[in-house]
Image (cartoon, rainbow, N blue to C red; front, side, top):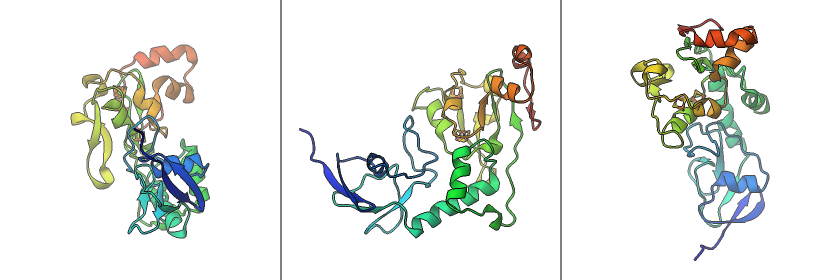
Length: 235
Ligand code: SF4
Ligand code: SF4
């Protein structure tokens, strides 16, 4: 027996959805835009980035739309001043430390939410060395927003390889391999799922990286065979 639909109101518009529908999915059914960053339709939603927070009447705190399944009768507001302020601060903190140059969606949100990352005096951009340790893809964690998607697809959401995890703490937290080993010495099978899942330029095919930096197409194969090193330079 199928369960009865529940009734919600989102930004003043009523909608009837199956129970266990998330706020994000219900809003998208109404063509209401809620920004996301860590969320992907291909990974398990986990509410890590909190960019999708919304106001649910009666709830003490803002709710992450990608994971919260509202109750029957819920009244939800997706763009209140409190919601906008929460999203603005998240974006400002990220933009003050992470290189958004290859993340046009995030650049657009910075403008849309009138962000001023420069107001966080004393912050500095993260500039870990580009990791070029295999023939298939490079890792530039200066562009990493810690969305966790690469770790998820490498693990139970797709590949079951478990080659990636977090390392470090606080400002120095990065995605890394276990014991920070080169990918060629891990359980990585070079499926490329993590590269496809990355929403920024942090993970990029080595071929694309080389072409972008002026290597002639006929030389790309030769360069990808070269044993990579950890380096900051852009080739
Ligand atoms: S390429 Fe390697 S690290 Fe990336 S998802 Fe596949 S197995 Fe994991
Ligand atoms: S490397 Fe890409 S996919 Fe992985 S956490 Fe960083 S931004 Fe997300």
